[in-house]
Length: 289
Image (spheres, rainbow, N blue to C red):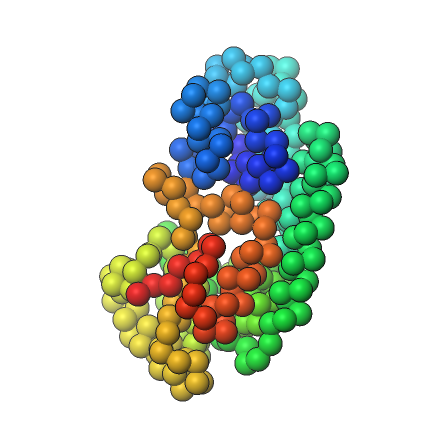
């Protein structure tokens, strides 16, 4: 019921066990998309509007789901009443990228591929620690996100995205110290943060600067401040606005939230490169130009 589950299973070579996916068109895995085209994988709807008939027809050994509130959803209760085994996986609650990646072992246990899971996880951890220890120099001051449904979310100081940015050598402006949850800030507060920032990350659906400027009348001015700050700090005139949507499929599915969850080492490498002013090729991030 989550594309992150696809990423974990794909990473240990077990994508063939998948028979149904919620939001199949948003899946980025080439193997799974091919399986869907051949009719071997079905879309089962969303937990708010599930296709119980399709789920039953697949006769699954297990349905992997997740929760937001911590309480069992109506969807889970219904599946159990139909005799379908349900396993709730909440890796999204983990605060550090390596903690989320460690769920590879859970998927290894579920599929009998623990050796493969341990091998992938060891590689990820080793790479991550090596890249983190190599990040140095002046800490970049980072503004994160744009408004979503008129709310601008800033990750807390003990948040997954904040840890990634800090491990890469950045500081998330406005992040509440020790807070796991994101907080909502006003546009005025975001404008004030932009006056300090020399980098802007994760700007919604935008892929170009002109697209970002059209999102809000104050964004052109915020962009000018960030570019000025970066230049004054000796960071050059390269790209200082980046988005984590380089790997999009034709329906808008973002691999950052699929394979990127299992490979935080690659995400970290992208961020270190960005903070060092390297405009070279990235895996998950694109520069806005």
